[in-house]
Amino acid sequence: MDKSRFEAFSDGVFAFAITLLVLGVVLPQLHQPSEAQLSSALYGLWPNVVAYVLSFAVIGIMWQNHHALFRMIARVDRMTVFLNLLLLAATAFIPFATSTLGTYPTMRSSTFLYGLVLTLCATAYNLMLLHLVRRRAFHASVGDETILATIRAYRVGWVGYALAMLLAMIDPLASFVAYLLIAAYYVIPRGLDSDTT
Image (cartoon, rainbow, N blue to C red; front, side, top):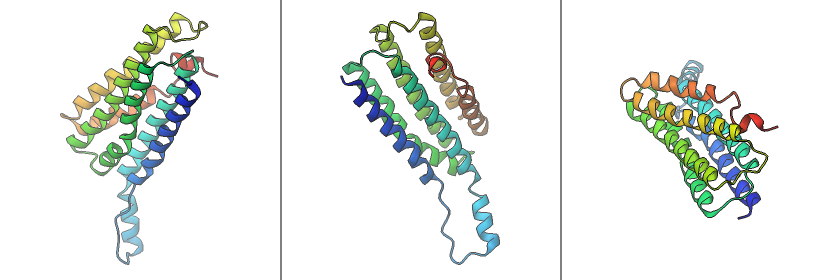
């Protein structure tokens, strides 16, 4: 499998998903509004903007992790392509989940949906990483400690998103905050990402 085509296709999906996020910030149609009405309507969009910023960070971090991971991979096989397609399918759904979360930030269904989508992304990432480890697809220069640190970092996201998703059924706002904290956790490079220059 041509790794450069694989990466280019993945980059295109990440770019498309991150671009679609802005479509979730929609100003309600106002008929000849006053300045005060327009200002109020713009102010009312703040949950959508927060959800947009959160998801922009999430997809950006996912793209960076994807780049860091496949920079260290020597070869790509059919199963890697399949697992990557699962990741990209879940990623392409993030804009819809983001729009729902921004429009209904205090409801269980919207925060649960957002967590479900990110948990699916994390599941695909973890399955793909484990497959690559089993296939010994890494360059010989990649040490075992780096691989183990990457596995740990990926599992933190997996468990974190699953717990935040379940928390949504009890306290949607706490769940929203948990999603923000998980994104903040990944701002610091970990595992393979910390070895990327």
